[in-house]
Image (tube, rainbow, N blue to C red):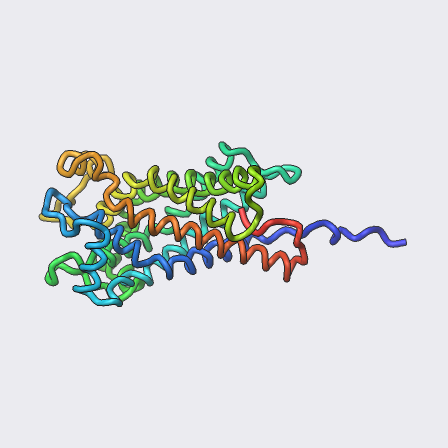
Length: 314
């Protein structure tokens, strides 16, 4: 009699599929939240160097962009946003889910500290890979706030990357890499770990069961925690990547210089400038990314692996 087949054991998703699904989920979410990313970047650059603030509130910024640049203007930089997700999110979620599975023992998920460390690792590596697209995204979304003669006028993300290399050198693609990686480490430690932890806590109350509503609530909690933790680093990153060199001297020497000048010229709480659009973007983006990821994982397990025993995502 033939020995029992090992196929009775649940099959595991391949690492390539995890990377693909992670990037695809992030790209799908970006299509919905790109206008909020644009508003967030414009708000963070408003009042740079003590200049008069261009926008009073997030809604004022959105109304001004629509009035001056049209409906298509709110999707400025979409190609860069998609490339950023294709590089950054593909890498970070692929690495996170792979390490998450590696540290899951006997069906028991890793503890909160382990999740945070996994998130930091995944975020840092993903941010380094995604920095060129991030630089292009910041510049493209910031362009409309400048006088016509000062605008860079990139046609799309590939035109932006080519011109940056040609006009400023290849290393400029990684300008602001340190604060970008630092922000990503904070974001991922907070976002990925708090999402997983929120899911576990919510399910343990007995009022939640695995499904879209659980994913939505856990994502909104995760987004709020992540926004509060990461905004100061995000402002430093945004201003460094959008700065210009004047008479051979850059506006900022580094992230600490940005933070000190911002606090001195605009006040301590300006480090959370653009909190509303940041959270309005990060919250739904977190929700949509994890919902898309959960559903893709679940469908792959059901239709390809024929395994309905596991939940869809993280």
